[in-house]
Image (cartoon, rainbow, N blue to C red; front, side, top):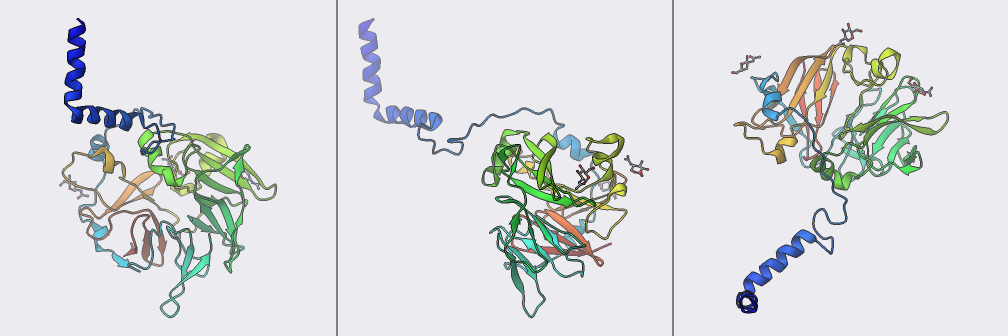
Length: 332
Ligand SMILES: *[C@@H]1O[C@H](CO)[C@@H](O)[C@H](O)[C@H]1NC(C)=O
Ligand SMILES: *[C@@H]1O[C@H](CO)[C@@H](O)[C@H](O)[C@H]1NC(C)=O
Ligand SMILES: *[C@@H]1O[C@H](CO)[C@@H](O)[C@H](O)[C@H]1NC(C)=O
């Protein structure tokens, strides 16, 4: 018996490479120094019951003409990660938030891009001209029509810091509704929200008269953009998140009857869809909650990733969080 044990140990020592490999693997999985990607993070994957990607996409309307591929890339290498685009009440712009945290505005060929706010999705109050900003690091902020230093509006809700403000919309009564993508992870760690499937995202509301912040909806999975619609804020369906564009009461888009939404297919990236084709830029136009039009760049020739869209005077302006350009397309 004893002989056998000894024999085993000897075998192990005779193969130092094996010994080291086991040690390295052990260190790798236990990560005692918290240097791995999830080091120091309380990573708790959540299982969701969602329809398989193929099933959803199987019945999804497609753009056989791949019309987004007819778009034009503008300001190439001049803007990095322009996710949200805005125009002021005079139609001047675009204004956009960049990956470095700045908000810049296009002043025309003569001047070019100018830094507008030193501190990203944004929205103008059309009456006051103030620009409201949802900054991932600083929460919702406001800056006057002349730009400059932005003022924070809400940094905490119910005594806890707001970690990941993402987008906002202004209610007609002046309240600011904004998304807080996660209570657990900030923007730097946003990938973990997707990977873990956690649902601590919220919609929050800041009331300027009382300078107070409130939780409107809780338990959301990566709430990203927000667009106010009457039904779920007021009336009998309060609290429901029904999409009904014809009852939209706020926003700067010139369209009244249509709401353009952006659908991300980012989950493709890591769930490795086994489809035979990649979906790149994809815009869906809805009316009364019905999909009436889909615009795609099916081969990703021009638009590889679409983040947000504005329609201004016969043109769609399309922002992207991960590329160094703004795309435009004549529309309708
Ligand atoms: C697009 O092509 C698919 C497959 O070829 C077809 O089933 C579908 O009806 C087409 N859609 C339109 C809008 O032409
Ligand atoms: C604006 O309306 C919303 C929705 O009804 C309400 O929750 C909020 O308190 C209102 N804000 C102000 C400033 O009255
Ligand atoms: C959206 O609102 C309009 C007008 O109130 C209504 O007629 C329509 O049925 C609604 N659509 C959905 C999907 O509820």
